[in-house]
Image (cartoon, rainbow, N blue to C red; front, side):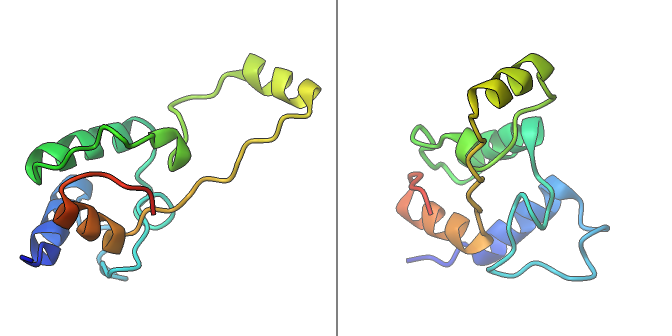
Length: 110
């Protein structure tokens, strides 16, 4: 299979701007949320462009598993506290996983 790594790295650089993360560089273990700080609406935009650019089916992708929503709803926070409901920890998406998704042409969870 074609190696999409260079194309993927270039895509990520174009989407995030390389100036602030350039010190550490990108590698297969780089995480979108934790390392590149892609979150909320930026994650929606990133994956919209990602799917189009790499012609990948993302219909099975549930961004809520991996990213926070945009903004904070205080009422929801209070209700969850009263109910004893805890937010599940978010899963990480790495560059290595994105490369595998590109190769398979459809989203699957890491």
